Every structure is written in C-alpha cells, then in structure tokens.
Amino acid sequence: MNGALHANGLSKRYRAGWALRDCSLRVPSGRISGLVGPNGAGKTTLLRLAVGLLKPTAGEISVFGWSPTEQPNLVLARVGFVPQDRPLYRAFTVDDILQLGRHLNPRWDQALAVARLTRLAIPLNRKLAHLSGGQQAQVSLALALGKRPDLLLLDEPLSNLDPLARREFMSGLVEVVAAEGLSVILSSHVVAELERVCDHLVILNGGRVQVVGDIDELLQLHKLLIAPRVDPKSISGDATVIRATHTDRQSAMLVKVGSEPVRPDWEVHDVSLEDIVLAYLGNPAAATLPAPAMEKAG
Ligand code: ATP
Image (tube, rainbow, N blue to C red; front, side, top):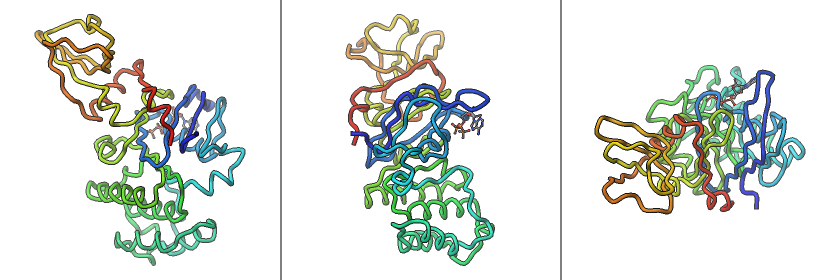
C-alpha cells in the first residue's frame, strides 16, 4: 500500500547543486503530516515534485500510487496545491477566481469554497490585489479545497497570517480533514502550530530525510536526560544522543531512547515536538526513521 505519498531514492538536482538527495519516505493517508526543515532544506522542491511541476533527477515519487509526471491527470485531479508564492491573478475578484476553479475542476464544490470565505468575512466581489496577505492565503486554501482533493499540499501557508488567523486556519484544516478524510502535507517553520494539529512529521535537512514518523511515537521515543556531568559517549545502553548541553556540574541530553533502561540516578523528562525538531536541526548527522511508522502506510 502506497499511502498518500511515497518517495524512493528521490533526488533532485538544480544547476547549482542537489536540492534533494536519496530521499525515501512514506506519508500515510488520512493524516496531517508536518514537513519541517531549515531554509533551503528541500521542502518546496519535494512538494513541487509531488505535483509534477518538477521531474526527479533520480529515484521515484508517487501520489496514491501514481507518478505525477507520467500520470499527471490522475494525480492533479486528486491533489490541491497551495504554493508558497501564491500566484493568484491579482486583477481578478474572489468571485472570478472561484469561477475559474469551477471551470478547471470537474469535482469543484462551489458551496464549500463560498462557505469558507463567507465565514471568514472575505468579500467575494473584492479584487485579489486588494486583499491582505492573510486573506489571499485563505482564498488560495478555499480554491484548493473547492477541488475536493484527496491530498492537500500546503507550502508554508502560515507565513502571512497573524496569530489568530493562524490558529483559525489550522482549526479549519483539522475540521476539513475530520469531515472529508483527506490527507494533508503542510510545510511550516511554526513548529508549535504543527504540534497542535499534525499527527505525522517529516524533517528534511540539507536535502535529506532526517526524521519521519508518527508524532506520538516520536514523542515517546525521545526524552531529555539530566545527569551529573557526563561525556555523552559514555551513555550506557543503546540510546542515541541527539543534542547535549553541559554546565560544570550537569549534562542535559536529548536522546532517542533505546531498549535498555536509563540509569536510575538520571532524571528523565518528556520533551515537546519543538525540542525534538530543534535538536535534529542542530545535528544534521542524526537521523531516525522509526521502522513501525514507515510500514504503517494508510
Ligand atoms: P524555504 O524554507 O527557505 O522555503 P525549502 O526547504 O522549501 O526552503 P527549496 O526551495 O526546496 O527549500 O530549495 C532547496 C534548495 O534548492 C536550495 O538550496 C535552493 O537554493 C535550491 N533551489 C530551489 N529552487 C531552485 C531553482 N529553481 N533553481 C536552482 N536552485 C533552486
């Protein structure tokens, strides 16, 4: 079973160099998956490959089992893509752009798109150029949802939104996913928001997949250990140190726990998703690809 998106050895090279290198991952369907990574990590490149806007240099990518470049009609009919740069036709009114959506998409749901925009008090007769950045983001989302996609790809949709709009956007997304059962891949730098709504996470770093897995599993797998000052290499057992900080007397280590118990004289604390993400981003050599999550394609 392929899940919503499956990549195998996926690589993309631009003239300047590799943007993605040998990426293998599986995103299960029916879930909201967060895609995080530093600037230039390859997130946009991955999303553009998923909709066939780019062709892999090597390896494969499939969406619901279909190739975006070889079977574009099958893929595009089922995927809504909200790109980072939102190339909306600025001279169009909101209503015009909805009409365009209706003409271009056989499964178009005008009522759903209009209901969302009305609820957000976005006037349908206003030109897109005269909407705020956040309102334009909402129109892009309404357009993507109006297609009734099975997979929604959102490239940094939160970047133009104020904190309240962010929260509303994310709550709206959770509602739609629950009601329609669609799959979402959402790239963002706002990890705290991702933690609230996502149940699956992919971390890209330097064009490589660093972490992929269920968020619940990742939270269980990672702990903060506080110990009298130690050399992280001396950690007994099979835990992996992802990040360590030391004072004269103490060491604090974010670890991926192994099967062996932690020493009883060490404190063990839970960590947040943000702690995990920051620890991995600060240590590009570390990687975790929890086997159960890889196999659990929806
Ligand atoms: P950000 O968080 O800044 O949006 P990103 O993770 O989405 O970054 P990408 O936009 O996928 O990263 O870029 C990955 C790498 O590929 C970067 O080094 C970038 O400079 C390069 N790149 C992206 N698009 C092109 C392009 N059209 N031509 C050449 N290089 C590109």
